Image (cartoon, rainbow, N blue to C red; front, side, top):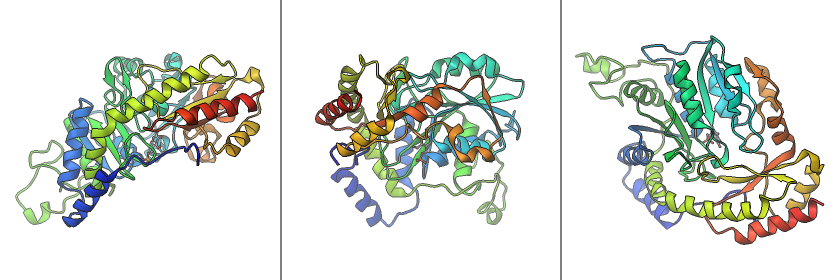
Length: 389
Ligand SMILES: Cc1ncc(COP(=O)(O)O)c(C=O)c1O
């Protein structure tokens, strides 16, 4: 394809790391995963990282961890504030743990949660915020963090799409009580499948580790704050303390992650060069609404929402992209309210829901990648010029 939605970021170093790991006979998670976790936490200025097998699993154990805290655990029926646009597995763990969603509209330009609605969204049952930074563009994480602190809410940050983005000199993923990342193929760095949860809190860190591996104590040190080890080694070897999962990564993924992480600053710089070109070609064109950067985007992709007043036909535009061999897709997972799965949810919307529907019905994205996309972005411009008449 002339202009792909996503490209592999692996080179010979990753292939060698995989071969080395398998040759060592170590397939289940071990030192390479632990090494990657240390490096990933340090990169984000956080104390702890827990690597898992996907970003969805990171969200799952992140949400679960708040239910097993000693003090003030979340309970079924508590409310959580979420934006209307994200990926499905931002929301599913919230439903699975019996939380009631209060869904806020997004801003049409950033595509992130409209934080002017926060006061209106708050009820006496609100206990948490699930913040999402869409496609590399930081949400108003500073505003959300301050709001959460002011009202004693837990703050979970789904940063699966915005690794290496920055806001006020801090990395996205450094704001949440727990912050999650995806290492899926198309993301900023990839371990094939994979994910990470970051936290600074000791108890949460131990809960995340136990939840990752069957809910047992095997991965926890003897002085863990979440259980007291007894003398009986026979029993202690298979001791279960929380209803956990098996969402462990494989050892080769840790080895690949460490190599990819070293490449990340270079990847982000190239993505941002592509973004600068995209913006220079599209920012002044009123027909197409593109993402307004909040802080420093790590530019996962280039979004376009057709301005309602321009009265363009998305079907016609997508057909033109297809014949020009340009990949496109819905923005993230679109507006969650448009999906059948909502019949299984306990939720309410907060105020008018307009922008998320518009982005769902009249938007799309094309890819960005850590390679020079100058010819591709110029072709996109030409195609949209013709189709947008
Ligand atoms: C915002 C968001 N959350 C969670 C996920 C899930 O990540 P994974 O595909 O690694 O399970 C994604 C995936 O793209 C995502 O975009």
